[in-house]
Length: 183
Image 1: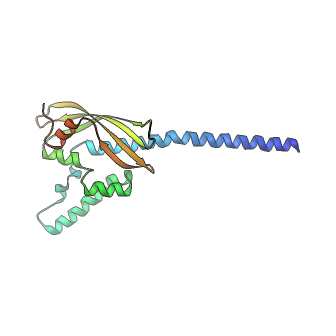
Image 2: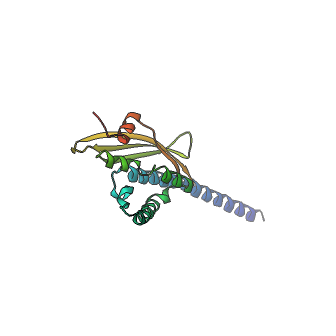
Image 3: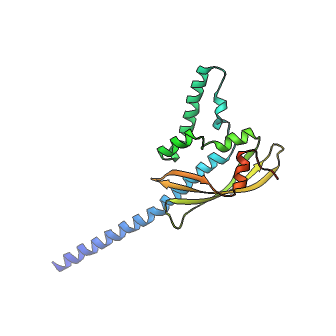
């Protein structure tokens, strides 16, 4: 009888250890998925301009065509971005034009952005926050390249982005969104 109890206890301990190993191993995978989600969205936002991301490319002189164009544009945004964001964030970013801000600015001010590298790390204090650094090239209308760096933070909820903010060099951000870089 004692031998059977020891075997059951041994089996129980073994099962607990196996469960802990699986639970412990799933955490880095989740972090990696979050990092990849963030990298994907940054690439979509900052490799600019992308002609599909420009709403004017869906518009015409006819109001009927404009309604169809708006539907096509909304479909593009859903297909491209919705899977990466919480529903409320996606809806808010669409209404505020946050998803394609860099594309619109790149077309308006005639420049290109090309992402070279994205580093994403989980915040040490808040596990749902991820800090990122983006190294990219700014290419002006004359083809001259300037290396720039943007930093930011993404907040994850249920494996989706609840917020993404570019919070680095404010002068660079303002320049990109209001006329391009000036030397």
